[in-house]
Amino acid sequence: MLLPLKDINPTERRPVVTITLIVVNVAIFLYQLSLGRYGHAFVASFGATPYEITHMEDLVGVVGYGINVAHYPGPKPIFMTLFSSMFLHGGFWHLGGNMLYLWIFGNNIEDILGPVKYLIFYFLCGLAAHALHIASDPSSYIPTVGASGAISGLMGAYLITYPKARVLTLVFLFYFIRLAVIPASFIIIWWFVVQFIFGMASLGGSGGGVAWFAHIGGFIAGIILIYAMAWRIVYWLRHGGFDD
Image 1 (tube, rainbow, N blue to C red):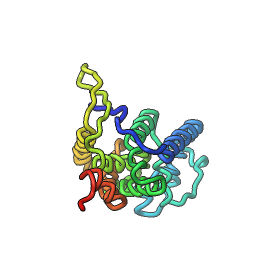
Image 2 (image 1 turned 90 degrees about the horizontal axis):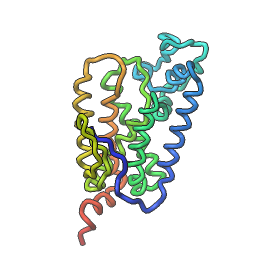
Image 3 (image 1 turned 45 degrees about the vertical axis):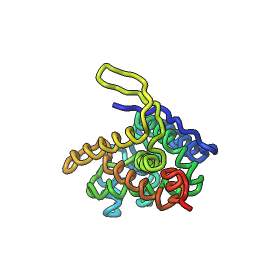
């Protein structure tokens, strides 16, 4: 197992949007915790549920999700859950891992795109992640939450723009644990292979767990979008300048 801790890749400007996204995600998670047992209603309301989106039907009053429907804040604009779900998380580890990856890989992509284009890029990757996840199981009743789809897009963009960047990483191999500096390309490709293997293995399955196809969809979108939105910078970074 590899756990990236920090990339050795300085930025030229302060990553204001990345910091803001982290603060907003943490704040919403703390609010979610403050709801106690009604937090399930909050997640059911603002998480993106594939069946709801493909059928345009609010399921909370139908299946209940094991909550007291009286505490459900609906009705809701169903398509808006594609955005609101990006700011919800299933627990401390889910939030912490996502925010760590957002900081490591997001600040450099924000540096390339600038704040406005970066925010557009982030949400487009998140939407692409939802699209593939929903396509993989359009009748799922399970709400999808987390920023990982959008963050997967940042990783795809990072692979294209900074494949040789060095990343300080914790390496876990059974009882062997050590710090190592590893190329970003190795970490990101390893991560994607894991997502792909588990994604393929999950086809036809049921139940909750990780939205593997959301990660795959966001990652592919990130690769495409970084070329579409910053092709001149990508060319410069990969080729060391422009031909005369």
